[in-house]
Amino acid sequence: MAIPITVVDAFTDTAFSGNPAAVCILDHEPEKHWMQHVAREMNLSETAFLMMRADTWALRWFTPAVEVDLCGHATLASAHVLWERGLLAPSATASFRTKSGLLTARKSGDWIWLDFPALPCEWTDAPPALRDALGTGTKAVARSRHDLLVELESEAAVRELQPDLELLSRLPARGLIVTAVATTPGFDFVSRFFAPQVGVNEDPVTGSAHCALGPYWGERLGKDAMLAYQASARGGVVKVELRGERVGLGGQAVTVLRADLLA
Image (cartoon, rainbow, N blue to C red; front, side, top):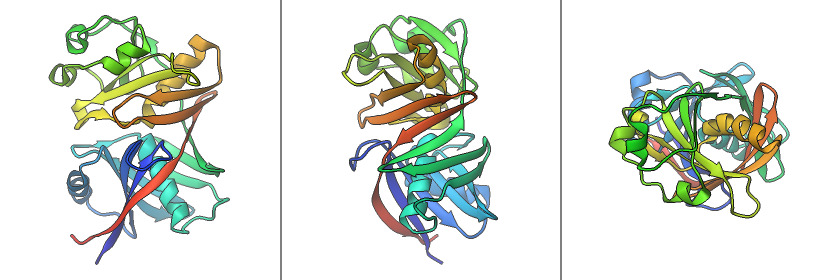
């Protein structure tokens, strides 16, 4: 039986930018190894699998290498597909049961707002391999539940960074967030995200990283609402709102491909 699958560029209003995610809607929960095979076949940073459960959708995310506990762009893409296919009314909230608890999404004009857990950072010493992996000095190092966060001296340093991915893969974290205060007009901070540990050398736009970046920059800048740019080759824009123990992440999405899985 053919299974519909959709590829959506998330955190962008322009095709072929932002972060592409595949979204697969199923009427049953398949074996984990099948989902991993599909994610490897799609070869995107994340493939999302949706299964209807009562009044919520079960949602799981897979990189080409592993299942992950939290993913922003594939959640945004999943909500976009549900509304686009008419499986949810435009005014309805999309509710997802995930490994990170209940996550929701709602439409606001051309934007989709995700409600995610805040992941505040704690200051930490730099791991021994970090400087060698980055090839540059750091202004500050912190750690969230999932990732290491490194503040660099400037936006230019973030954009120009060419880390040693093999050394990064040895760091004791899911991934590495590098960030700096923005000098590009209109933005508050910029970032990039590297996760060779889970099969994603550089993620184009990372919603879950902004669960840590939001609290980090909110405290430093004295703001509850910020506009962020992830400065990967594809690039993407994320609105961030601090909501106590939660973070609102705003983004746009564009469908670029619809197909059927035949295996």
